[in-house]
Image (tube, rainbow, N blue to C red; front, side, top):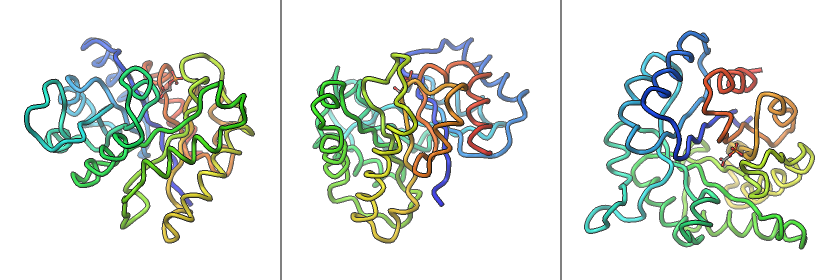
Length: 249
Ligand code: PGA
């Protein structure tokens, strides 16, 4: 069985004070051990690593460079992310693809770089509303998946995570129904088994897009939904810990 994960993507949110409050609330919420990860803004990673010490939460980055080092102003290397003690990196989020023109090729380079540096890539894929309406959902999603994984070799199923995030459901309050999501997750699972016969069955596939305490249980009841990548509802520790607790059921 794949593991369940709840991963918070804080995007460009949270002040230092809000971060302190978040971890204090998490500490008092007696969260049991589980796979709970949070990606703050890069400049807050170090602080979060300190504050998360007595919690089960692991910290990661929201993006990384496809280069090792050198003259790439403003970029953050996987080596630096790893060295500081972070655990994972979100790659290919639709906001990066849309606002910063990230292509599947760039996503693939970043995935390879993160694996080289022993960071777990959380690879985001998903269709726009137009693509769904044109019946292109599976073509788009499976295309992003195979191109993102080009040349990626695995030695175990925990080395990467896939996050299916329909673009039309991100931050809009519109969640894909659990049935709509499962349909896509099932196809992703089949492709993963084809690409990785030894591990495909056990790689975690997360759903993302307006996940909140009121819809998490329904989503997690689907056989191929192994957790959630959460934006808005991950900012408040009380909501985030409800989501985490649901993933342990
Ligand atoms: P949302 O964001 O939960 O606010 O819809 C999800 C994401 O962008 O990862």
